[in-house]
Structure formats: C-alpha cells, structure tokens
Length: 361
Ligand code: SIN
Image 1 (cartoon, helix red, strand yellow):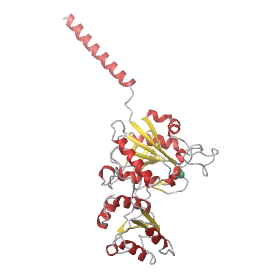
Image 2 (tube, rainbow, N blue to C red):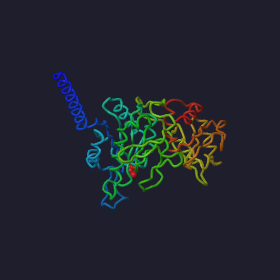
Image 3 (tube, protein in one colour):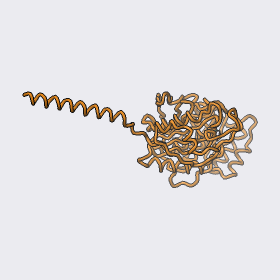
Image 4 (tube, protein in one colour):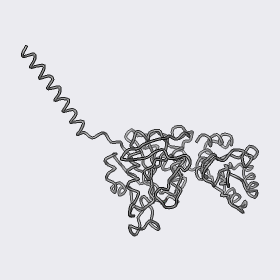
C-alpha cells in the first residue's frame, strides 16, 4: 500500500517536472521565423544625400541590398532575411524588360518551399506600376510586398528603415497570404491595384484615395480590414514565364487645345495599343477622336481612360465604344490601364475579351 502510494506520487511528480521542462524548452526555443527574400531595385530607399537635411536633390539608388539590411538589424528578429540586388536604378527608368526579369525571379523564388514571402525595395515614382504588374503575373499566394521611402537613407527621420521593417514583417505574415501584391509605406497596407502616389514629396503619399487602404501595420503586427476583390496573382490568365518582350502600349494625354499629333506619332512609332488619358469621364476631344478611330482601323487597340484619377470611365458614356470598337478603362489610372492592356495583348486582340479583362482585374 505504502509502496503504491509512493510510486503514484513519484509518477505525478515526474509528470509535473516533465511538463515544466517542456514549457521551459518551449519558452527558450524561439518560434520558427519565416524566410523572406528582399529583392532590391534601387530608388530613394537606397538613396543618399549630401547632408542629413537633403530631402530633395539627393541621389537615388546608391546603397546596396546588404547595407539596407544591415541598417535595420531589427528585421532579423521577425524573419530570416536574404537579399538580392536585382537592379540599382531610379524608378523613372523602370522598363518592361525590368518587370519581366523581376516577375520571373519572384516566381522562381516563390516556387521554393524555403521562401515564405518577398519584399521588393523600389523607387516610389513608378512603384504602383511595378506592384500592379506583379499583381497580375505573380503565380503564388505567398506575400509579395513592394516598399519604398520618400526620404533618402541619410535624411533626418528617414522613412526607409521603418518601411523596410514593416514590409518584411508583412511579407512573413500569414495575414498577407492570398491578398495579392501589397504596398507598405507609412504604416499602411495598400492593394497594388488601387494605390497611387498622390504627393510629390510627403511621406504619406501612397493612397487609394477613394477605395481605401487594406489595413495597418502597428506594434509589429499587420491588421487587415479589407481584401482586394478584383482577381490577382494565381487567379489571372497572364503568364510571363516565356516572354522576353511586352507589346508596345503608349499613353496619349488629353488637355485643352489638344490635337492629333501625339496619337498619330505614337501610332507611327509602332504602338499596338493606346491608352487615351481623356478629360472627365474619358471624353475624346473632337480633334483627337478621328486619329484614335483611324488607329483602331489600323488594328491598334484603344482604351479610353481618364486623367481625373478617380471614378469609372463608363462604357458608351462620353463616346460610343461599341461603334468605335474601343475599350473603356474602368477605374484604372492611365498608367495602370497601360499595364493591363500590355498583358491583355499577350493573350488576344479581341476588344470584347479585353473589355472583360478590364472588368475582371
Ligand atoms: C525613384 O522613384 O527612384 C526616386 C524617387 C523615390 O524613390 O521616392
């Protein structure tokens, strides 16, 4: 009896000590960190100025990816980070060829089991365009976060380090999986499709003015309140894996007193598609309409967009798209309509199918 009681107490004590040991081990063993690859492309986030107060007139794209990572040691606490220098350019020089290279690299990396997410550091001037392009051609649900900064790395209150930290955190998070390509600056999470640069210099420049941001990054955690509803990434029909060039698509900008010169020149240069950044609801000035109609008759695909920056360009609203065989550009900015039209032209020249794509993506 006595022996039995002792052995039961010993077993209970052993069990208790075992649990304590397990709990202690769980506490000392750090949670498995996600693997995030940073693809650096240049921009102000990698820029340097002459002094700490130089916030204009600095040089973009001078700091390499290794130095960018070293400048924010905090990111190693939230992810296992590796870096690759894909380009080192100011983003006004971003071209279709850069996008193809970047998209292919992203798709290769995301197909690897040991990569959980990707951060792309980028100049802010064309950041929204690269993000939207990737949103349409990345073939993975894993997070891809495009990030930049408005102040160079040498400036007082440089926004690059906190933006990079937040971007890595977001790219390694479960919350960001399946949300399409994201843009993270100024503690805010934006959808690649809807976001645009709204101010030439301020740190809060990236906004989806009408449709709103997706969420915040606060206290080391992403908080999502919305998800994109337009199709993206794995849901799209676009595949750039075998492409080395994209169809030439140009933008013609409307304004008071505009004539046909730009449209005619762009068509003569060999454009396969033209986005018309019309006034108001995508209106076509009388002197431009015949040039656009003639271009369409030559086989050029015309998308009616608007320079206004917000709102839907109504099909058959300010122009008879059915009669002219034009495509209405939905609420995409002219620069994003150009991207969708380029990708559409890799699949079809049928304007009805292209119109559907503008309602889908
Ligand atoms: C750039 O777009 O490369 C320069 C401007 C910036 O990154 O803010």
